[in-house]
Image (cartoon, rainbow, N blue to C red; front, side):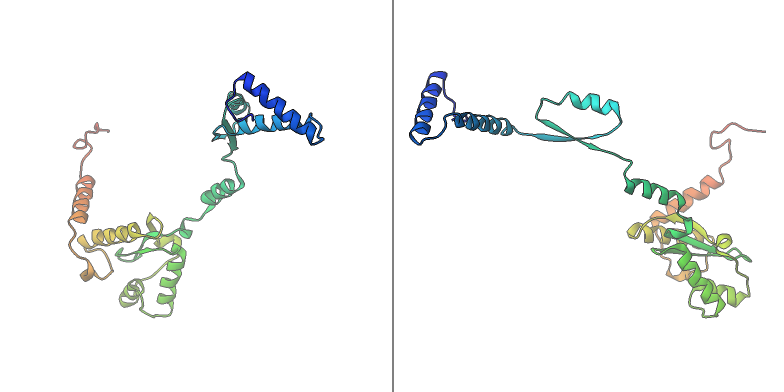
Length: 227
C-alpha cells in the first residue's frame, strides 16, 4: 500500500480495510505497523545508489565523506599502502639491474667491438650462456666466436655487459634491438652478422641525428661558453 500514490483520504480507507481483514482473520492489528515499516524501507532502498572510492588520508577523508552521509552516494575507502604495493615497491628498488630484460651489448675488452642482442630473459642468464660458450669453445654465439678466433680476453658480467634498454617482451624489444645493431653497423663496430642488417630510413634518420648532436659544439647548441 505504501508503494501506491494515494491521497490521504483514500489511504485512510485502505488502512481501515486492512485492519478489518486482520481482525476477521484473528490477527493482531499491530502487525500492520510492521508492514508499514517494511514498505518505507523498500521505498528508501528503491532509490538508485552510486558508489565512489576515496583514498583514505586520515581525518580529511572522514570530513569529506560525512558530506555524503544522507545521500544516495555510498563511499568505499581504499589505500595505496597495501601489502602488495609495499612489497612491489621494495622489490622494484632492490631488484638487480641484471635481473631485468631488454637490449644488452657485450663489448670486447680488447678491441671494443660490440655484440648486441634483445632478450626477454634476464641479462645474467644470457651472459652465463655466452660465458659457457666461450669456456667450452662451442662457437655457438658470435661473441664467443669473436673472442676465440681473435684470442681476445673476456671479463666478469659487471665489467663487460652494458644494458642499453630495459623493456618487457614484445615488438618494442626487438625493434630496439634492431636499431642498436643498425647503429653499430654504420660505424663497422658490431660483431653480429652485418649482412643481415637491412636499410631502414627511420633508423638512418635517428643515427644521423645522434651523430649531429654528438658533434655539436656548446656555441652551436646555444649554450654559453664556459672557461
